[in-house]
Image 1 (cartoon, one colour):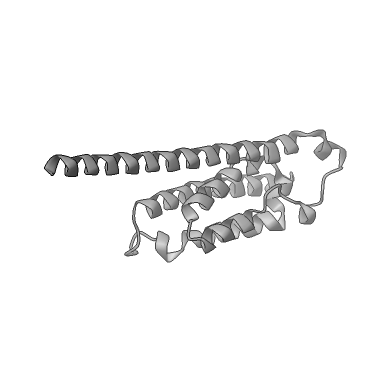
Image 2 (cartoon, rainbow, N blue to C red; image 1 turned 60 degrees about the vertical axis):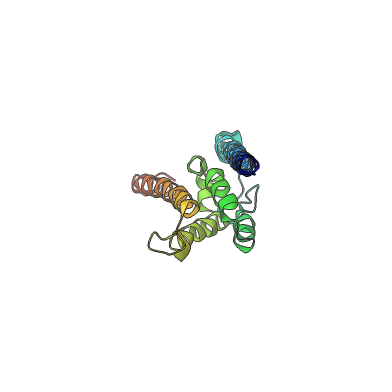
Length: 164
């Protein structure tokens, strides 16, 4: 009986480990895809000749390839912020390369929502619900907000120099 119990415990640990490994691999894959899409959306489009020839879409009409508000909203509704938040943060990784995208109303809405999530009670260390997942999400938000703060200070410096 004891041997059977040990075998059952070992298989449960193995299954849990395999499940955690699969979830981790899925999350890493999603973040890699988001980084690649970010590169294509912001870095490649910003370096294209369209920006130089004046054929760009105006700031207020900028349409991101992915509806980031919908992604965050769905993650919040399904209580699966650990899947949506890292993806959105990675998708915005190359935002600094495209000043038109950064200035767009849709991107500004997403950035505002991310700042408000940073103050969300569940992600505050003093919360009773704060655990390993919340710690990881908090660190993703901290990293993202630090990057955005750097971007904002760079943009302000360029504006002082008279550059867009």
